[in-house]
Picture (cartoon, rainbow, N blue to C red):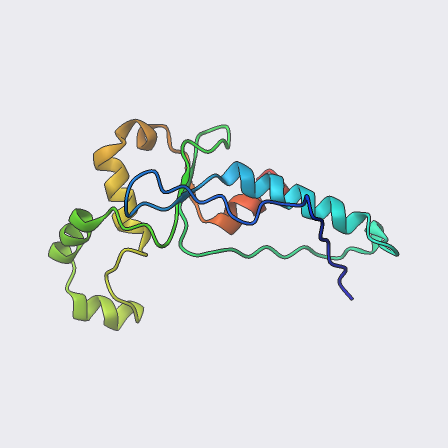
Amino acid sequence: MMPAASSPSGPSRSNSSHSTRGWAEMDPAQWWRNTLAVVRGLLRAPGMQPESIAAVGVSGMVPALVILDRHGNPLRLSIQQNDARTAAELDWMRGLVDAEEFFGVTGGSINQQLIAPKIEWLRRHEPGVMAGARWLLGSYDYITYRLTAT
């Protein structure tokens, strides 16, 4: 059995930032604060015996993009799967890759949810961020990294 944690003043459910039309960004630090709040709540649940925990599972939205520096700190807000800033980068990618071949290999289309156009957008528009990037992670990868420090 898995206990559930909830609280009226519990974790934030949404911290989307849409500072520019078509952009969707979130703060990975808020995800971590939410994780800590939920874990603390679960550990305080009646009958919970922390020593009985055998495993922890982490899941998240795909494909969010989290960029960490060499110290493991986010360099910017994450770019979410529904972010639509990469029109030019999608055109660039379509010029490099045959759409039918891409579909045959991946089962998907060349679209705004892919990570490659987001990375190319950052390379073009935020080269300082990319110069400081050590790791590119998804949302759940970031939480796993914080839980394990590896």
